[in-house]
Image 1: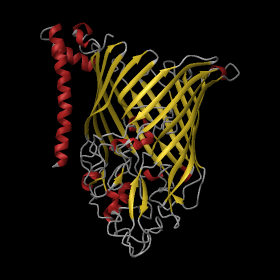
Image 2: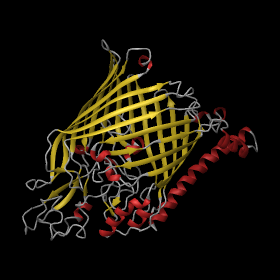
Image 3: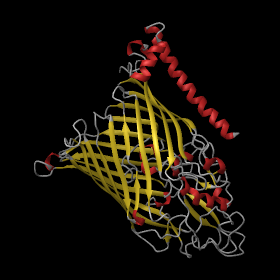
Image 4: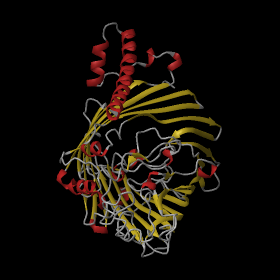
Length: 583
């Protein structure tokens, strides 16, 4: 019943928005040419037609600053080999989760509508609202595990007001702030939490970011000697961050954010570990919350992961239902700033951010002494952190007539974090969490808009080569990846290569992109082909393959934990413009 109600609400919201768009279009067309509404709309939708749908001269004066644009998007995906999912199904069955034994090949059927309302009141004031309506059917996996309506939403995603006052530009509202520039890695990109429930984050970093309510000032600073383009950018994020979607639900259909939804949007949304299509595999040892079917307490079956667990009780695993989200007070606020400058053809920024972890960490609490009534339980927490970092971008001029004409750009990012938590199997550590400082760095070489006549005479080539390194400054043999017995490595290495060109002035755009991690010789491949018809830019088709190749299915950091979930995707999108601002 709940799934059906959510489905009806999502469809109703999409239909109402579509009806509003068509009504406005009809009113405008009727004023221009009585009786030509259907022909005008038909030509507009299928053959380009006029842009926007309502001509500017027919827009009332009080709407002259309003733009209404958006798109309708359908993404259909099929598992490359649905039989590879049988291992996860067997695990779900073993812990009592009712999962269908069907090998249904449907992986994604996402129907998505986005509408942007951009109102320019004057040169100093601007409003922006982005609405999302998403409907996905109950998938075979999630429906049998009780998550049939997990991905459906109809919500205001972004909503902010911009005010300019001299050198100050102030953004107030729900927004996304991106400080990093990587294609698939988060290094300087530390501000917004992420949504990993409905996609692979590495293949869709842009859409995985979650907007957050914040105060966001940008102050232009005067030039000083060789330092130009100077500005100060600040971030203040209150602990009040309501969550508007159906998620997250896992561990037996328990709402983990019950009573805490006024700050649930302040952390990342993780794919359900049981029954989720985009969750990673568990290791041969188990994590908390799986119950005695896999982790018999009497036999100390949890010892490989938590040797500290010597005094469990009846609610040891049920305690996971109580997530301890960041404090709902001033202590739970996040804040940071960025200083930007350009000196001698080099763009540089300095970054400081005080916040908290966006992914959950499992703390063990209580008395480890057997027989003590204060038995041990797990609690999920999001520890606080401090990030200090910098970025540097500059062009590279190589000698020679051939290399000298290639627009190379060196791009670097680096972040030091003071207290990063790790799962610890040291029996002398009662909390099962160890802290260490970490350094996350990125070095990239870019080629942007290079015309290679031998490859394309009507487009430009782009190349991105990124090397990401993650280092634990105080490593230990007892720290491990969550839900696996695998020891956490001192250094993590990832290399990304992206090659893009275009033909017929952007109508055909192939993109070859992939990530390599030496752990298990893991390859994350997501090549795609973007197609636009020559007669109109309103339509587009994206064909994509997401492939996971690895010899280590336990490595969640390298991506090997997604092995077996390779997908073929076809995405169809229709862009529309209802109103266009004259300001």
